Length: 317
Ligand SMILES: [Zn+2]
Image (cartoon, rainbow, N blue to C red; front, side, top):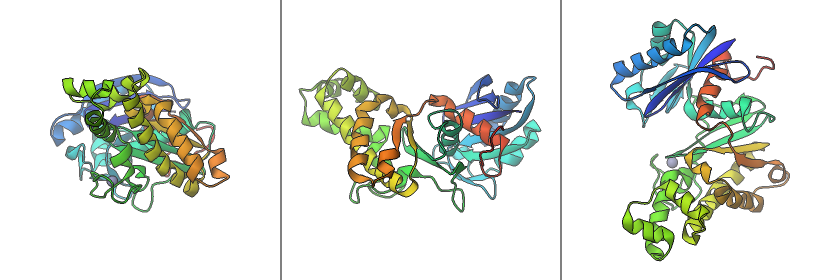
């Protein structure tokens, strides 16, 4: 049976009808701006519009916040306050008549990579997304780990440098504070002022350096930009080494905008994991780029809609 996955982001809503094999059969997009009532009606309209004659078994919303699985509502959504405290399941079922579940967006993306992407051959997967923040999800023994309250899998908020930069969560030295796209841009601006003669330094005189500039300059061979990405990869690797020791994954899939720097970040991360993680976990794990890009949320949410109870992977569903 087809299902609808909805990726509710801070700036846009993308809804797709997805087949059991992971093909997106129809897709619509809307901006997600606006107060609560307008946002809810936009999500409802997106689901009703994308359904458009397809036979659909249910829908799952992937949302940027902490989802209380018991109450099926969002406890905290720093990038989309309008959905905080809203009983999204009830609201959407009322508007669409479809059975609806709600999941954290990074968990849904992890499930998408597990079912259809970089981890489709694996039973134990870690997914990390390097974007404005750092999110992630854990699939262990084919199950999505959510924790007691649904607040687990916050891979970006493990401490990797006790006295490091302050993180948005209030802690210091989180993986997010050292390896997100935001952290890359911040570090790049520091390195630019230390090395004004580098291409990075010259760009910083013209305008504000962004995370994507760093990858581009690194690819062009600028040593200063390369050093920023290598440093990012080392921080990432310190985090991943811990995940390897705890979860013993077969695959760690890295997604998000900053992951487009590819091996410029990942080679340093792999090296760090090899130095720090224990054998045999470090020898097994494959650290690679996620393969579904921005579609991982829709695909994972749709797959979760088919099995809302626990994300248990049942062959043939
Ligand atoms: Zn944090």
